[in-house]
Image (cartoon, rainbow, N blue to C red):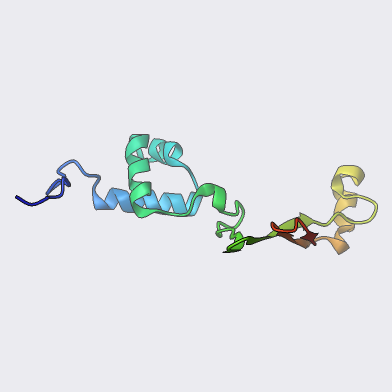
Length: 132
């Protein structure tokens, strides 16, 4: 008598492959959670969650909301040594203020220095030193 898997041989009520593809497509394009996807496609949220768990897409909290790219946290661990490196994207505000201070029309004229600045921070867990 040998051990056997308890996994079923067939699943007659499994979500059809076409529906699974639609769920993954909506997830990638709109970056929605199971409840919103289920409402859009007319499914039950638990079924959508089960499909997402099976295909393992990136978690919504790990994605950049604007671009949909995975935000990576670079961590390297050795015994007794851990360094965290984070990158923070900051929007530049022009000298004299932007559109909230000057109004829409005047704020558009001061966009010369607009854009983003990136702040790189490294924290050494062992010594507690932070570098930016």
